[in-house]
Image 1 (spheres, helix red, strand yellow):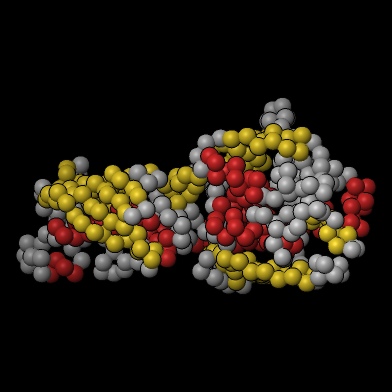
Image 2 (image 1 turned 180 degrees about the vertical axis):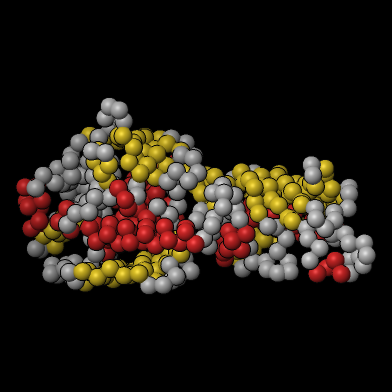
Length: 437
């Protein structure tokens, strides 16, 4: 499970009012560099203050607080969970969000579909560098006051949630989803904030939901839903709790590879669990040397590519431009088995394997442009204009440069060049397509 980091393609504005504060808000979503994560910047303060969306900066509260809050250096931003859920759900890893208030603008419909559409209008772009995941290797749990949160090993990200309310309309609901950008957009983003009518006055007395209304939240009364608009999903309530959980657990600071199971959790318990998982992520980094953060090392390549010994012929990626270009390294060693027969006493790296090294490097570039690359394979369809300029010998390091000439749904065409010590040793045009594994 690996993909490249992503950010929004260009900056855009989103305006509205804060759900709890009722303050008018203008937010600017700005592309951010690799490994910067999600950062909120309050430009209404002098000087402006940046708050990274991390578990360390999350304010631990009680479940009655009804939102997730970031706090640092005396600055506070309330109700960040819906923005964070949208970015995490769509696979946006790096983004700076400028806002002129202490709370993001709540979507006017109460649905994250408004955020989703705004982001899709400008687009999401890959940034070349690999995403590193928190991989759940053993169970991690939080159990307190009848609330349970559990993280289990899983090849992907799945979230399962159970809610239990005394109100007969809400009752007990359960839902479980494999979280991908498509699933988030179609099954989760439309789930709106909800509140029980009996809680409305109490929340108002505490200075909350000043920006809430029947238009941007579901209000559940003793006789049913008080909104004119029907539910977006039959089990919209539990889906919104999954949405909140996606946003809250994005505070871990990296995507999660695991199955997250929740029983009746809320923002406070989610934030505590995010801190536990962030601790696990820090320990993982201590034992897993990721090397240069912008490079794809062999562990990243093994997660993405199906090839294994003795036919994995790319050791590292030095550079990747989303859908445009990739630069890889293949170290040629005398220990490789084919040198026993090619040729005895005169070892030469086979020309066909130079092409294969190009193809594998280009395959990583192509797979990085698709969702769920682990479920895909790259088939090469043709090799044109192949030329071999110089022999490649044990001890050489091949620098493989693949440039995308044409990229379509039906396939792509790439120009491949291989260098040793700056000298061109081979070149070819490669045609390929992505197929289901």
